[in-house]
Length: 227
Length: 87
Ligand SMILES: [Zn+2]
Image (cartoon, rainbow over all chains, first blue to last red; front, side):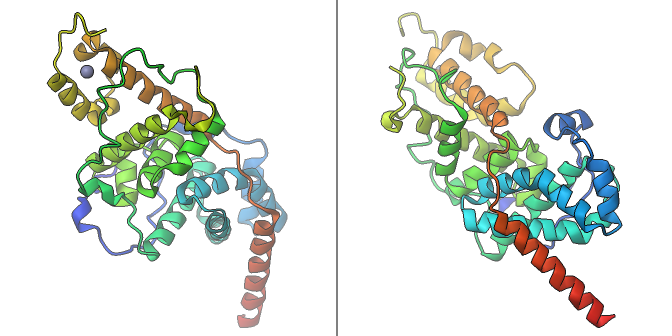
């Protein structure tokens, strides 16, 4: 694990160039679970590295959905997500010769896409970590002690579409950490490094994101209430 | 449901304050002493664990529009042209 991921939110450095695309610290097993090898991928990578355009298109088609979904979830905006998907693949085209195969290709590519999105947000001057963090915790996200044990627990009653919609409603800072950790499977120390915040900050943002989701998912407003 | 409760609201506050850390530890959260007596916090933990588990199923469902590939191709073609000119 990298040692320099412990930075405090207070002294975030100015926009930095893309992080070095080192091999992921995550166990290979976890990478495999998230990113199972795709048939024909290795051959396509080798040929694209030699400048073969058709193979690059094959790689695009293999990975466009994952990369675009990642951008869209992080940004919450179709136009921006498409622009940055494009940017991520152009960057892939520039850098593919440097891919050495010491991590899964998709892990490498996704990290590149995450960096493209984060750089874009930094350029826009948007805080990557929710500002609400520094304020008093809002009532809405605070612990609820009054819902009573008889309330239904969520288990078994949310489907992907419902959860997807709820994720879209999260404030950007919460959504970022939730997508990186719970959806994409990054560890807190990796997220802290990417977002230039502390590990504790990453954990607390994730917790608040899940709490907010829970409140959103329990709301009867959806029209999909379980009796 | 609170008839035989052996914890105070303060215990719940304390437990919930520690939750972000507890979630990241490898221990089985549901075995935590507080949860043995507190149905509210148990239900909270079950929900949050459920949300985290469901999130893993959220992988890819969106496709970019075909225009994205067109734009990439155009950009690459422009680049190739520029490279030819300059060499
Ligand atoms: Zn409790």
